[in-house]
Image (cartoon, rainbow, N blue to C red; front, side):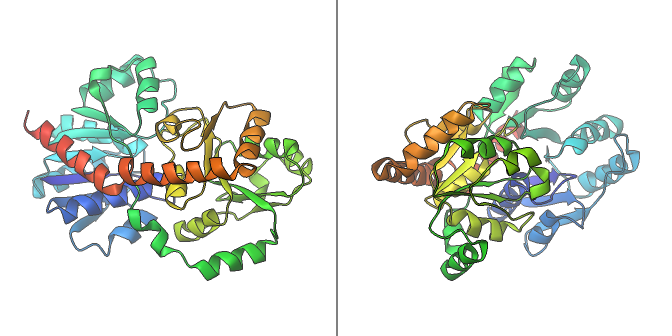
Length: 358
């Protein structure tokens, strides 16, 4: 297959790594893979050393960027693209526009990663009419789209994946060095690895935790958290700001529990990464997070807006080694069996082939 991925994003985020794993994996299976993104983003830097992936530097200037459409048409025709998978928000509309303007014959697929904002019926019609299918990264996200008026038959679920060898990239000495630098001492470290989501909920939960606990927020700066919440906490709280993915994984490994409080996530890739790192997880009962966490089996779910419940779940894990070991064992197995990169790549390959067979 000749496959083209497009994204106007490509910065440090779970979506960037999912696109990277997918493009590399399909190329390794012998497909001709092309990626349209900006030269100045992380995705380009990660893919430019991949010998079997062709990169195209193309920037979207505005929502009706006809130059982007024209250049996209040239890339598609020159490389005989049969599948176009739009992964970013801005490029979704433009790839349909290009297909209709120039009569392109390739199949168009969207991948949606977050809940939709309130969309008028004309936008839902445009996205459905202009695509062969829309990929949802979780069953929870699919249900949200159905409630927003999308036809369930037009939605196809493929979970994100994480490479099995993630832990081999860690430097044990560096983990201890980081813990000492942060001054966390012997505290039980409760962390969150994410850009701006709903970290305030975890801050609030610290009000219900006893002494001996510390907070570690990776990927966010202290000034991005409501200051009155920060000032009301007596526990040690540390913020790393924006860090590389490699650094984030080292911070993650020193946590005793990783919490993902979110009203946005269509999946929650960092939860799978945590499971591979043998770090117990707690996540909001929202979106795609319940696709990953089976409450009480491989982690805990909590209801958004209930910090006391979150604190209670933290205490249950940290005060019960048997439960903690159960979550670690089941989580590790689920991460490898259900959410591997290999599984994701194989499912996308079969899905694309099924579209071309129609």
